[in-house]
Image (tube, rainbow, N blue to C red):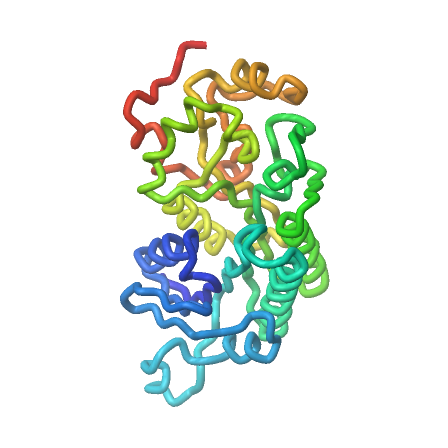
Length: 303
């Protein structure tokens, strides 16, 4: 049965694919954003999420005009998915990036829990692993990158995501809500696969993304699985696809291109350096969009 979902940032690169997936699964979605979203049946409420009053109002309103027909006021909300953010550094000054991302996340989680919404999913990031926007050539501490990693970003964006994870954990402990943080990898839309041959030709260019990615459509599936899975309290999940963006097996590739980083456990042959084992085991994730489907000549080399 479809659920009523409020999705923040649904007009963005990742959000629009996730919203489309949720609608296709039969859910009813209200989008909170500063820009409209052109998906049939999805209303966009223009909302400044750094304003707590606007957030409380937005999370307790009708989704669209059909809501008025009941005469009973706005229907309950089953889940809030919070993707809205300044999406990286070097768009706004660093203090504004940090302030907007941390304040909006606090406001959304506070309003949702105080309004009795028991499922909240927030967008964290691969940048929390500390290399994506690092100064200089920083090495990861170990591979694969799993959810218990001591995340240590030095940039304003990654730091905001680290703080947001802590905010989610605090509210989950305080309220008993299920709050799941998705460490989203480099988001790839269908047209982005045209860039993959250049990735393969220049392995160092993908170190900052840990040679990993998430297909935007598979990200929609992950969000849907999070909505369906109750009772986990606070959780962090890597939201990435299965395989390393290389044709060489993972361990030999990493030994060559990240020689200073130890491999902490045996890796599956082509396992992504950001591992998605947890979402497979806990949520039942099965990718539908492996990058090799879309890149000519992308063949796994023998081990």
